[in-house]
Length: 285
Image (cartoon, rainbow, N blue to C red):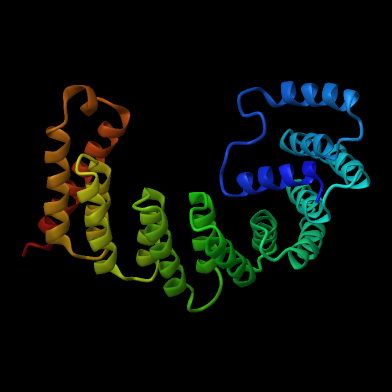
């Protein structure tokens, strides 16, 4: 592989697992203008054309991006990298069927290329082929367990949509994500939503308790617990939980208690206490 293609391979892998985009320290328009100057000075540098194609994709110039990729391929850009970038551009342009086809070819040619696998999994998910997408994400996290949290979240969502036994598989994916990257709140939230979706109230409450223990000052988590208990018909527990929320808000420093979020939480908790009190009054003989 030419040196320029090897350099771009590293760049694309970094992008796939969550590193900063090209020229993250400058506006994309400025980056594009700089690349145009560099291409004028070295018009046969395949890597420069590929970088240009990427920036064009990021700013929505999809047809121009595809033309730049064609030029890069003519100049010897590695075929797998060219296929990956072509698929990503087609996907961004909304040409999902074409994107999946291009990325499938690239994946078959380079089954261990994380960037290709990620773009292909995203195309499959866009096509509603959730099970196939989830299999692709499985391969990605096996190859790159320190992937960006978004990759793990996409895997969870793909598993959740993949069939009748999807909740168990998706919860296993949540466990994998937590094991790989630690207690990322978005992972715990995904697990909580799955448990509630499947009616696993006790498991959801246990997860919520763990989340609260990790963030004891988060009154919003306490409010969520009260709301879950109320919806589950566990009225006495819900009343106690709403009052705990009010106590937590009351213990906040004045500057925090007067934020819009804290005001909303307090209002919702007061409404919950009132609903429960009203319900009990209605049940009296």
